[in-house]
Image 1 (cartoon, rainbow, N blue to C red):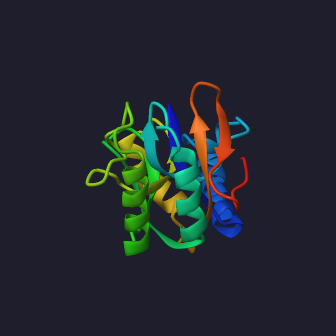
Image 2 (cartoon, rainbow, N blue to C red):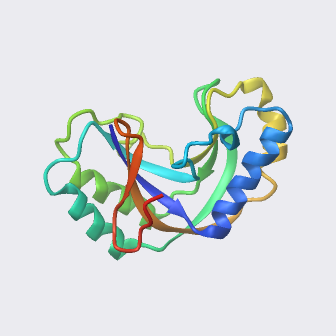
Length: 175
């Protein structure tokens, strides 16, 4: 599995990590507990089995032209009742256009994750996995202190087989 992800500016990443920490301190599920070196706040915009030939270069060109991209976070929600706790991202026309362009590059790729395809994608930053819906009210109070703004400043791809990340674009860090 290969993903396409957008990375937050340092201030926005700090805001999300602080929410992770508040959830963990309250004894709730939180991505603060994930110690893998690639774990950081990100927006997944695509996931496929493998990139088609030339896709990484085409994606890098897209991100070099589109980033940085302003972003505003919205409310905290539990997706699908008892699954991820997420901070929703307000979809701007620019973000929606970038998302569609990424999927144009990945057209025909095997193993397209239906959660990320245009028309079904819910842009979000994950706060916790396997979250219980009945803890949603407390989680909202802890995580969503405000509705912060920031930027997506870089892009990367996560390789699920090797559990490594690689940059997508000249300005993108590896992690």
